Length: 204
Ligand SMILES: [Zn+2]
Picture 1 (cartoon, rainbow, N blue to C red):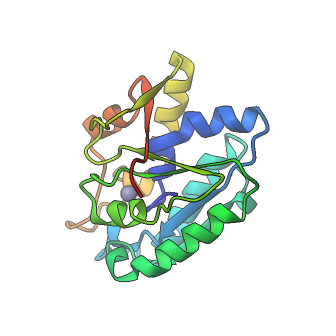
Picture 2 (picture 1 turned 135 degrees about the vertical axis):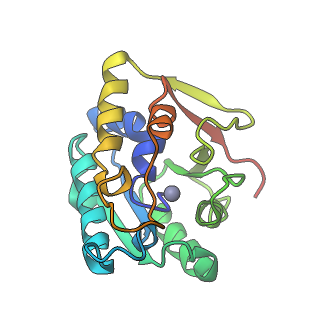
Picture 3 (picture 1 turned 45 degrees about the vertical axis):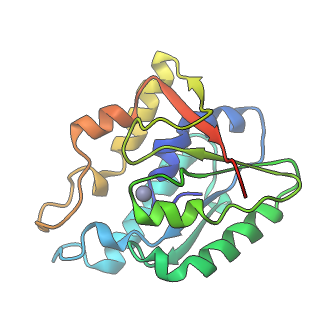
């Protein structure tokens, strides 16, 4: 479950890649439309930006065998998921139940600094056959209680960094919006650290 197009790659690119290689059925749900990263770019009006962010996700996931048909875009308004928490919960619950058990469902950590991430985190519900685990994004490298690490090989780490950088709309490609978002080199480095981290969701 990715609040924004790129969170699935930042959080779980290597895990998804290994699961796909083992033939595990995987689904990616991108919850928001991603339009808030550059709200005032003349060159990148909303529709163009949303389309490109989708393309970036499909391309990055395609490289590890998660095909377009396995990715769903809910297109809820970026930065305003709080106003759509019920819809987020409904969609995510339905998507998790639609998969054959056992399901490993990954959401952001409930203590993530980004409000959209916390809305997606709150959509987790205790349910037979579904194990909810969380991942850290903001801030990169935050510690989660009970966390387990998936160490990356040098090659996996390189592939992941390239995948993150392939989200070019989020890495500085758009330069005509002073309020626009761009991952800093330091953030990209932190997101491609030598391990992916996941923690079981407690409570609920
Ligand atoms: Zn995000």
